[in-house]
Amino acid sequence: MSKITSTYTIKIYEGTFKNHCLNLSFTNAENDLLTLKKEDKSLNIIKSCFQTIIFYIRYHLNFCSINKDIKNYIDSDTTFIKNSSKININKSKDEYKIILLEYSEYLNGIVIKIKNDKKKLDYPKWKTLININIDQLTDQNKLIYNLYVLMPPRRIKDYINFVYVSNINNIIDQNNNYCFIDYENLNNSKFIFYNYKTFKTYGIQKLIISDDLLNFIIEYVKNQNIKDNEKFDIYGNIPYNIASPIIEWLLCDCYKKWNYAVFMVQSDFAKRLIAKPNTEDYSSLTLFANFMSDIKLEYNVSKEVFYPIPNVESSIISIVPKDIDFQILNIFKSVSKTLFHNRRKNIKNNFIVSPYINIEKDKIDEVLEKANIDKNDRGESLSLEEVKKLANIIKEYI
Image (tube, rainbow, N blue to C red; front, side, top):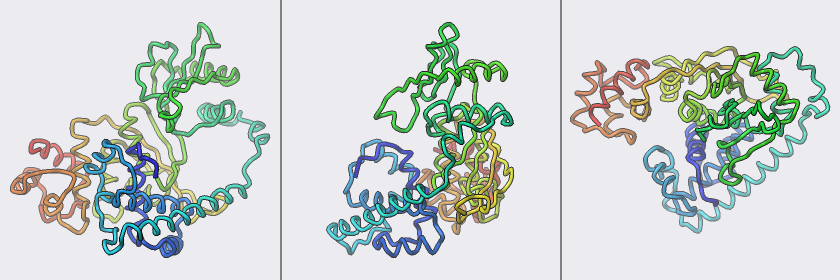
């Protein structure tokens, strides 16, 4: 297995495991495939599950190389990878090598099936796309259209961190990507990409902007009165099986780099984002997302409007980032995860066994009393404001 070089990859495995793999055997590829099909999981989700299982087994049996930073991240910030409960101690490493081979063979078959299904889709022809009348589109949608038609298409994440500058000296943060317009020499204008998936392989990318796109951007910047280093709005369709780590990346790693976002997501995921206390969908994700932003369900999208018809319903959500206290962000996240570490345990017991936060056991009652929280309640009963108050109090004890 290739070396895992990104915590983002680990987050994807974490989300896939918790959302889709809990009922799987991790020893019988054929049975796990049947289970996922019975649960009406899409091929892309099944693919993610098998990738997760393969990594999980290889990690626990030391079949893969993990760099020190990723090992430390796994030990401190994740739960399922550290937990070896899915490993059958009665099976030898040689037996697990055969098991891995079976999962890999099924995974290869799934990948081929996904590719073949894509070939069958009736995608619009390029000629059709370039002849679309865009006059009826909003200026923002025209910009998005032109970015994908007048330049080689890129991942949406590459444009999430996009910043407009007219002075090369304003390019100071390599966590961003830039649209540099040189008004003294327009031929020198370019897109500069520092933050993209394959950066470690290809390094900084500088792409000359096509004349048509350059003219549009100049007019757009003028009409929208955009200033250097001004933030952008974001629109996109998030891959449903990795929505959670993408939202966390957007809210944390890209904080203060965007104004407004609109996404299409799976309806079940949208419900988790806007859930209320004491409901089944209320979770640590709900608390974190609403601590970082204001989230609104705009409307639901029936699966009947898609072709081919998927197995899930979709929703459109809007997100506006909040001004937050970054000093308690990590504590807040740890407290939120602790409260939902085991939904059936009360708050005190979750703090006693929490792998996320370290408070002396004899101080837990004192902390909860200061926060005016009943230790026998469950985490799902606490509101966002109550959890923020609790996080501020815990800050004094760790």
